[in-house]
Amino acid sequence: MEFDYIYLDEAASTNSEALKLANFTDKPTFIVAKKQTNGRGRIDRFWVDPFGNFSGSILIKIDEDLQTLALRSFVTAVSVFDAIDEKIGNEHALTIKWPNDILLNGKKICGILLETKKLRHVTALVIGIGINLLSTPKLSEAHEITTEPGSIFDETGIKLDPLNFSELIAHHYVLRENQFRTMGFSKIREIWMSRAAKLGAKITARTPVFEYQGKFDSIDEKGQLIIINNGEKKKIAAAEIFFK
Ligand code: BTN
Image 1 (cartoon, helix red, strand yellow):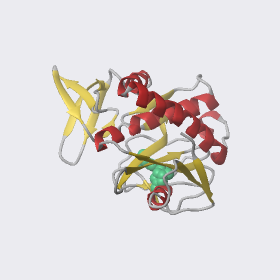
Image 2: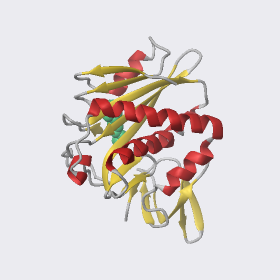
Image 3: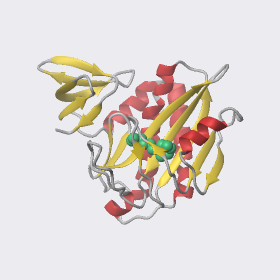
Image 4: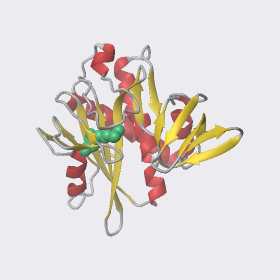
């Protein structure tokens, strides 16, 4: 798999650009913007994106069911982890918070947002990646913050160039995507688990309709979070996770 690259000085959201582009190209494409003015986060949030941070979206077309497509959430988290790890070295505490946030010293430095668009014969998958390379965004107080934000520069003093970084992410993404296609989810799952934040610790999973507390046991073959409370296993497909 080889990527075309599109570099933009500014975009409202690289995910929106990639979803539009899906009608016009079949080539895997990486759209990167120096600045985003209306970045989207998960759960209808804004993604605050100061200049110098990384905002990019991978567009690929895949003929798979939505559940398999969604596992790219883990494939991407593992790939972006690989890219960051390669640049900052392993003396820093880099972990992944379920499902796909990347934490550095416990602070969120990367968020990933998957969106899809059904086309006639295939589905366009857009994988939006936001990485706080340079600065830690100030978040609005309107949101409850699940994890304090940080940036790679603030945590390590290492400055990374956003445009060059897209090629490194693409390089690792292609390796992990191939691994996923040849070996299935089990290998990605194993690597994801070895990097998971708070595995075995008490966590809280919350949605507008439920809240569960328990020991973070594992993720299953669909990427669902498994929490154990009083010997009872709960499988959670989507929730906000709090480390308390
Ligand atoms: C999250 O809430 O953790 C996910 C944030 C994803 C942000 C990225 S930045 C590039 C791409 N374009 C968007 O509008 N969002 C994603």
